[in-house]
Image (tube, rainbow, N blue to C red; front, top):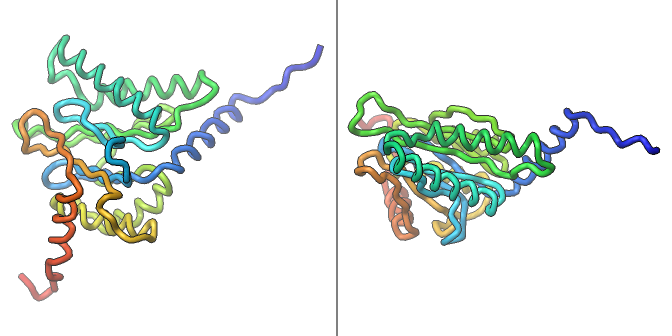
Length: 242
């Protein structure tokens, strides 16, 4: 009788993690940041109908990088869970925290027990409620192995996320308006990939806390071109100006 081949559990998990990271790194980048109007999502995505950012519930949105078929299944699952929870109990019971926890359990279980891990990294965002002065924006990042973290400010995911984070952070301030943040981050992303800027290559959406109930909105190419063009036309501010 032959002795079965042995691989330590640590090595198995390390190989799975490396496999998942390589799959995620092949995806294009997403930058998520807090702005004065809410939470802004900027994704490199030239496809017009296959979205990497989408609405989950009233004030909750979903962003993901990695294998499209896998994170699309997670997105649909999240929408169904949110709808059932809101219908069965209350709309206030649907939160980004609860959804992120559910995703973390699912991804963690797959990573531990299945041969192939999910090649995805996702972010669940919930914009603050304008009717509640104590509410704040909630940003939860969930990785392929089920780890969950509470984020603030600016987050980058996808290919070469660490390098992009350094470039984007250098141009980002928390109190920027949507248009200012968009133009600065697009410039940082263009410098990161070293190619000309095309608004058609970006998928941009926002959770706008000033809207009633459903706070998710998308920006089409014409709106993005207008925003970016207006920013480029503005004169540079000098230290002498008050």
